[in-house]
Length: 353
Image (cartoon, rainbow, N blue to C red; front, side, top):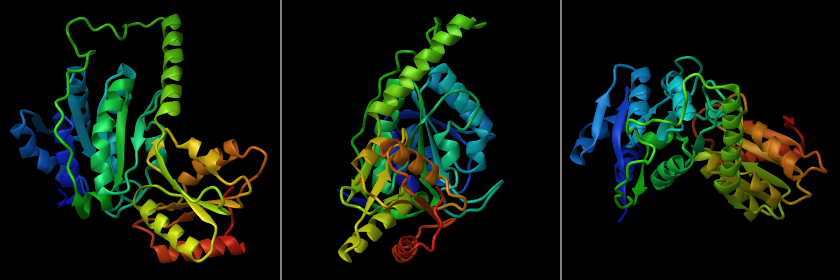
């Protein structure tokens, strides 16, 4: 039965039910309620909670827990996630699985507390140093965030990667009806430290490095092929296709449905994974489409790069214009999306590509 829950608290409870046994982190708005909730909830189920002295310490504790074979979690936002990138790189290099939650807030440097999508490029490109990728989920509702928590761990363990749950400040702070999943008792991962750690070798030789690179490419190609997730509507006859994820994806879907009711031929792709990006959806688009329009809560337009790239890949014979509707922060309204759509259609908005 559904119950009203604050986003961060529902997400934390979903993590417990997905088998998380260790959390380490440092408080930062708008994600702090996750660690506050887990500070008392994890000990109830035999787990461990640590409020670390810094974000750096938190992610390094997660490395230790992941190496020990348990489901480990950390959460932060903005600059806190930046500080964790070296640890995420290490997890990725060592083939350890964990989940990192980021509730994105707007701004450069320390930034603001406003909900946004300004960290898209960082999360989808790996974020730290090295030649790696993380699975990146972009839920659009509290329920979807909750539902994705268990798959995030299962896929992280299957592929030995980090799963990033890229939410937004709005998702952490809003309240919505949520149906919580059943409890899962996760098994210790088979590569847990046992005194015979053989995955890496100190002083790796060039031939071993090349072998590892080939294996990584194969792994990431397998993820790209098998783990794309998205929602789409109205693509087959669309003159214009919107691409939007997260909470703005919800209002974009509302705009698409209202526009179609008015006779406008529009469709939508809402990525649920942003890495791997749901390129398969773009092969469903009307081959005579007139334009691709991203709806984003950032100032610079980041999603538009991927939307344009995969449109080009799917529709090789045509140069389809790509437009970015950038609303900086917050959640764009259906009214504004519709208004800006008609400006695109009339030619008064300039394409990005």
